Image 1 (cartoon, helix red, strand yellow):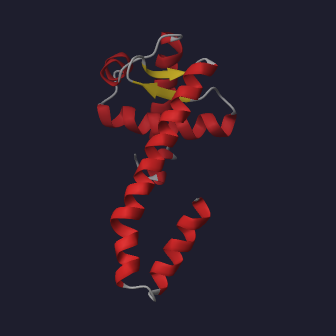
Image 2: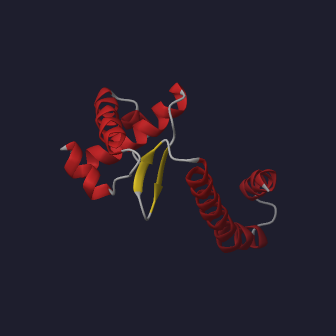
Length: 130
């Protein structure tokens, strides 16, 4: 995902507008990434930047959410069932990443250095997430 400074620049906003227009035209169907690149006439980097900026802009302006799934690709304003499936998939993925991070990195670090200030801090942060 592009850095925050690139998501908030004028170019990223223009790319987001282009991506939003293309996805709006494709509704209710979605577009796969390569289709989005072709339909928008943007480079793959510009489309990624536009997608990131569009997610931020949609959230701040109350627009329909942008989701992605393997079957339909990127979609704007999907139905409730599609939104719920996307949310479940993302939450499951992130929880798996956190579990692997905790068991593979933080736990061994905490066992090796139990009095380390950073270890105590990161363990407290992760416990608050739990």
